[in-house]
Length: 450
Ligand code: PHE
Image (cartoon, rainbow, N blue to C red; front, side):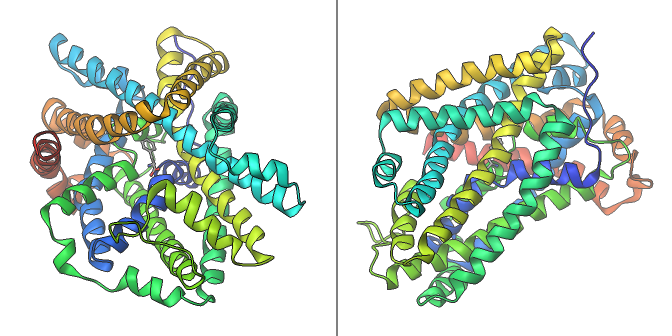
């Protein structure tokens, strides 16, 4: 018999945990520069449209499976299957989700380790510790190895404390802090020269760029990654959600928080880049596109902080605290997926399972750190571009085609009296059966064959 399952103690706790999972490095790096290079506000509209018409229904699929089955990804999909063949398919999809999220966590910890190193660098700069600063900001293997392991340790500490005392407690503290720091930084950056040019690059729509088919597909991929879909994260958080909660409302709030914070991140990152430009920092790459990804966070922004005089180190400190929080609230949701599986399947103590898995994942991190050139990009693209959408497709198929429609409705009716007459129930089943699978399959075919 497995140990008693955890449950979030309040709606706020769940919201912070799920929004914490969703809001991560993806939102703060990917979204703003994507928007700026691809039609500004037009991309924003496209992204919002896809997030609410396709990603939100898929999010609902995971939440409802989780809450109904009260189980980890493998157990949950097996429970929904009406016969042994489909149960086997459920196991395969569940395991693939666990494997994918484990690999995502491995590369995510490396990048989050950079954030930690830069965070410490701002402290070292304040106290004038130059040798430490040089080591912390130099992209060396030993630094990357140490900080990815330290970051994994933080993740393990939170997860080993459990759903309420670990995930809920930390997400409820860290997410409000994240929003507070984000807003403060936006206000500060807006006062600097060049910020308005950044705002223009971000918010003036250019529909001719944003409506290209390739871009629609990448915006959909971004929305799926951003809402942590396809790998059982939202499923497992849903499995700790009280039956009294109204699922469509709570899922809608999570999607709104995620997209809202991505939008806010744009209000910070784009103006910051143009402030950097005004201060003489190069913000375009050789092809004329805005610098994105790692180059943005660990080259352009630090160069900007350097030009800010004495305020720069404090801004840098606040910024890397923000990034570390965003990473940690996402990484804990990733680790919870394999931990829940091991605890529930082998009746292991949570602490033991967490440390055991944490060590295993840290070893994968080290493997990637020491084979960075060959492995890093490969792991990122296999997991986020190939595996995640395909698994997302299976989750929607399980809810739309395998689980009995009446069973879905009954789960929805818990916490939502009259769900059967709602607008949600008129639209969503159709989306889950047809629109989501077809749209995801289209993304997939484009990715694999073109
Ligand atoms: N949503 C997170 C981000 O935007 C990433 C993530 C993916 C988290 C998959 C959990 C599972 O950074």
